[in-house]
Amino acid sequence: MRTRTSRTVAAGVGATVLALGTGLVGTAPATADIGEPIGTIGEGSSDGGNLPAGNLPGVPEPGSPEPEWVAWAAAERAEAEATDWKADSAARGCELVEVSITDEVDPAYNEAMGAPADLATHRVEMVETCEGPTASGGMTLETDDTASTTAIGSGSDCDGTKGPGTICLYKSSGRIYSSWQYRGSGSVSGFLRIYQISTSASSCYRGSTWLTGPSRTWSSGMTRSISKTRTTYSGYSAHIWKKVWHGHTDWGSTCSKL
Image (cartoon, rainbow, N blue to C red; front, side, top):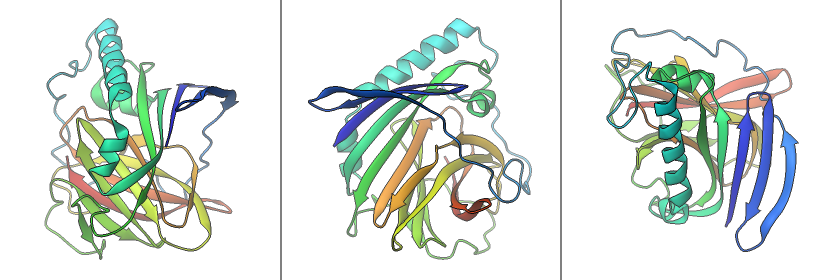
């Protein structure tokens, strides 16, 4: 299992890669170029109402002075570095292959919680092998993500995708996660994105962007996840965007109130 840490700025990524027991491996600049998904990726067909009204306890109030936000972000980063990610993965029936903690300036995430637009926060990515009946960590797997419901549910949820694969959305230890496991042949590339939606939504529509993962490649049986500190109670909708020759296409979604 490898642990990676990096620092991301608005113009690109400065990655310092660390491998357990080996120290510094290398430093390389990069950019997270995901291209443009096919179709609307911002505001979708909103179900209206019941959007977040305020931040959770422990998170600075929207519009708080910048020093409060910087101190909060630093504490959240330190907590992520102290987390036993191997145990976190094992609790969901998975084996951790790699974890990376990346500092980034994410204007969409900052706007959603009322923080300064240039606040640096962190994102955690994991690569896992998840097999057997406990691989979803007890999360509900819905086999028909087009089924009509009166409102989205609460708590962890998973849905089948066109992939074939399974996309999940859940919260744990103060974070919101989205993962996608690819079960097809060969490999595919794409990215995960989490949208913030109404708590009264009846579908997993694409609302306001909350978190976007970098472009990655999945091989058969691989599970990749992204996560960010949970700052508000809201509806969330996770989508897997598959790379195609002329952009990206939405391969499936799942949603819940978290």
